[in-house]
Image 1: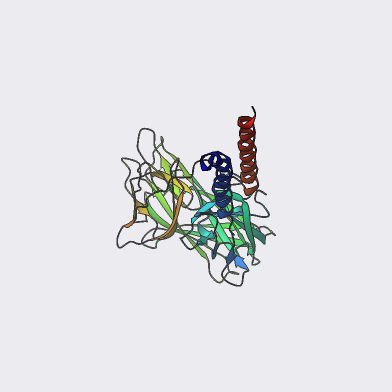
Image 2: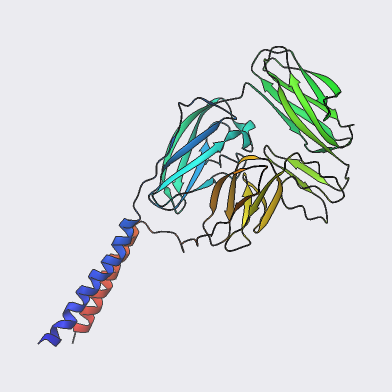
Length: 371
């Protein structure tokens, strides 16, 4: 008698097991994402802002910024010129708490920011449909200047481009050597909108030079450091807002502020960063700029706050905020976590699949009962 009941009960038990396996993980994926920033707002471009919040959905949070002058899909706060829809990753701890330090003075492409309100959006990397946003009012700096190329070589044409909100007719530009001796003095007119642009040819010997930009109407001027290196006709030099990359054919120059072979090292930065990972061979990004693969040692990193991102195919990316000092090397050695296989299914999709499995089990049962 009992042996005849077992086959009838078995399909029902199987259906209950399938529902438990399918529905429970679906609801386990539920969670929340939140974001807020510290302070009263009204920041200037160049200020630092701390964002934090909760992510109880996954262990990797992504943050992006959008607003006037930026793609509607958003871009990483540390690289405003990156591909639309991308962002900077933030590691979420076991309690679901995350924190992101944005030093806008080190961001690439800040010239694209206007005096306006910008939206910062966060989402879980594995569940991008769950988002949270917070808006911050940013104001353009009262006085800023960009200088490129830097480093520069003999006969290079260095350009200074800037803007000042205080009424000014002219800007005085002074170039001084490392001893404080004035090498050149230039004067640049300022437009009615506060913009100015001036260029000069490099005719100084290799070394470090201080470039000051002042105006009688500005209480404090700006100071820039210009590095003049020995001429290398085969080298190409490119500068971003936060890093300099030098590429010489046939020479391995992986890293930041790398000096070509045969050129004296004139980098003003002497901080050291040592990065390794498990597994090795992961790509390393310093302030959103790729600098090599692990294991990696960078000997000319500017002391101060930086963001290091480590990425490897098949693994979740790691984002670490660090402080590099001149006293001792800064070392980081994260163990990468394998990325989950495939994309997570929504609860509706999982439940639909479970119902389909139930139909198949019942159909098979009826087929066996037929004579």
